[in-house]
Image 1 (cartoon, rainbow, N blue to C red):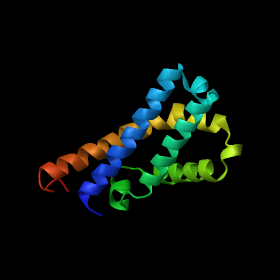
Image 2 (cartoon, rainbow, N blue to C red):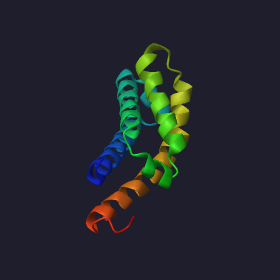
Image 3 (tube, rainbow, N blue to C red):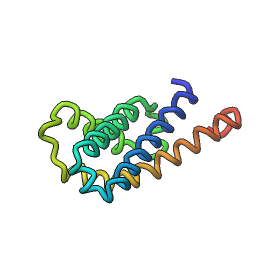
Amino acid sequence: MSKRSQEAKAAFILEQIDRIEKIIERHGGIIKALEDFEGEMAIFMGISQIGESFSKLDDIYIERFGLTTEKKGSYYTRNYIVHDYENVDRLIIEDILRTHLPKLKEKINDLYEYLSMEDKDGGRSQ
């Protein structure tokens, strides 16, 4: 897959994280967002989109940026939400949002910056 495509996927993941953060902020916190049916649905969709996009990132970048666990976890969470929607444990989602999403954002931002710099310098940063 092209580097530009990888950059676009990283940007999309960052966009989804940003949207989730805005939903949480609009509702006055994670718990309130998950208690609201629209907030919950929007957050679940964002998490699902992150997992789907993550699965399409090339393993060379996953390994380089220490994202192996995050890739597996985000895709597992995507499947959990999509295939068992009515039984999703909100405490698990709350933990993901509170603990894992901020760390993921940092790592994906590093990946995005690397890919965008790589694009600007003609790939010399590899």
